[in-house]
Image 1 (spheres, protein in one colour):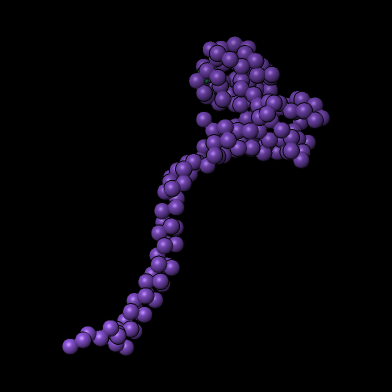
Image 2 (cartoon, rainbow, N blue to C red; image 1 turned 30 degrees about the vertical axis):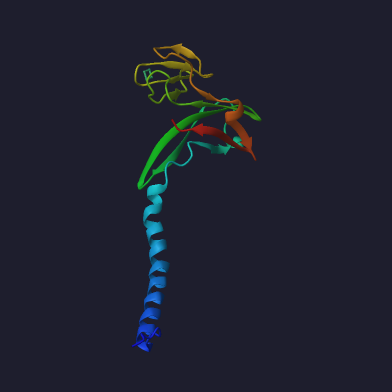
Length: 165
Ligand code: FES
């Protein structure tokens, strides 16, 4: 007896239902899996970025002004926020100097002391002059400064090219 190659109506409906079900499952499942694993595939967020510090006109000429900012790093599911600070010193109507506030000895944060006209580190008493040079203390070099390619004034906004270490 010859076997029929025709499928019955019931089998046909089962096949169509299974196919439609598979399409729906794939349509929902694939984006859901992507959503779940996407953060795990992300690493870092570019270590180098232009950081806006504020309008040049807001900085008083000759007065070091501390500007703090936060950078957030994404590593998979982990987000890490770090705070940084720089001193902006407007030297004329259209010029500016920016110093890192990280002491070049062991990395503590220096503070500008108006009364003595110097940056002072609270950790081991390093003292830096207003231009960032060494006055006294154990630090091996002047304060790091942003200049040249790492400093710009864009549409009146002072920006530094910041590299996260
Ligand atoms: S970390 Fe600043 S003097 Fe040591």
